[in-house]
Image 1: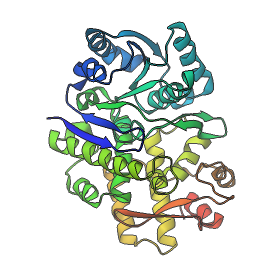
Image 2: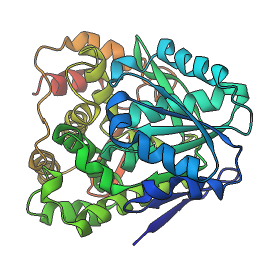
Image 3: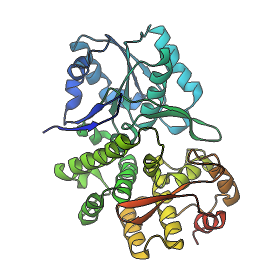
Image 4: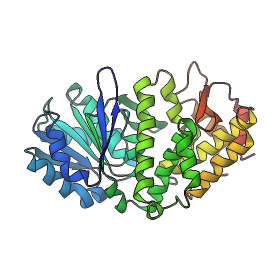
Length: 363
């Protein structure tokens, strides 16, 4: 059975469709949007080998002319250099203003394709077909697009909403276990910041460290509840003027960990997991959060098999300096998202460098 979640925005309302085997109906779904006939599908080689043919056949059956562009898998390819290669393909295939860029892949593919769509011909149609759990519950929804700068993650980008997000849970069967666990970090995040029921649902589940341990009901529940949480937040604050910043819970320290390890040691969700533990620790030290609830969060993260200890070999002073490049800095002050109860967080700029030092040193 299909679930449809609407992201309600003043000018860019769109639907998230969660449908098993939905990839087979991709072409017909896009046809209903009345877009142009040309589609450039962007993916990475591994995902394309699994699902490229299915997607292209569905699109062509619906009357679209399809070309494709592949980018290497990995956060270290999320750069202006590889973005330019998407532009080259857009030019080669003569994409027009009514044409569509379609992202078939995880968060890196979605972010880069979305930014290319936002900037090619000053904006063309954009479709998200996420294939990783992390992209399904987070990266594909909300319109954040962009690439990394050598000095920080996602510093170059734009808010650009897709016309459609199609989530087909059946594609998760080919997702590596490590990537599935990484996606669970974002699911836990929604439980901490917004949805206490989701958090408790995960607490009460027997085993959540592998897709094989999820029945269809639990998997659908985490997809629907996570997407609903993000849709509700984004609908209230599309361009992060205030509330939407809470979606970055765990990401402030997480992004620093990723950057200082050159994006080649931890996948995004692993860094976010450590960042959530760090943020929770800061909240306890500031008297905002109880130790018992912090332990519940950390236990749930451990239950997924995600890391909870920040690497001891990181240079803490470099990390603190790196925080100043975070996108949430206002007037030179780093804003942290900190929990005050399960399902609720606050945004504060009162976290001292000394507190960050203690947490980065696991004290």
